[in-house]
Image (tube, rainbow, N blue to C red):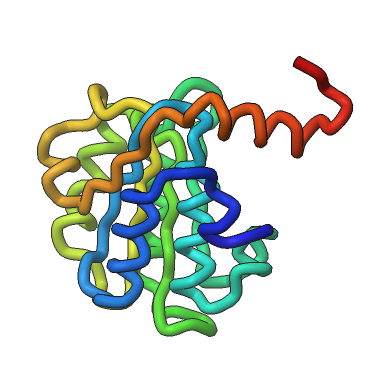
Length: 172
């Protein structure tokens, strides 16, 4: 199972992301909610749809996909500077370039300030999706530049189904 179908529950988040795909409007998204509820999986599914090649995106093998993750406990300015340099390169294959910033709440202040400029005025082909477990550390300015995509806690049933799928021999 891949795409949005692989994300358990989260009807509102999936609706917002599908609407964004159909409308082709917003350029910055902030997927936020508790850890382990499908934000990361949804971000990759969204990128796969935007780039038209979900398989290569899932394998992180698409040339128009750029992923930033925390190194250690934070995302530092150097990582965002690299992203910003790449952001101004035109797409290689697709019509767009997609930038996923995983663990966005762990950007240090310098990194967040550096990213803000490109959230305000991105190139027309760029889509930036921030993924955060906690909105608290992200500035109000960053939040206001993104379309917020909220994720909720999973139901007990969804957690049980996920556990059963991952570890079939596991019993209650």
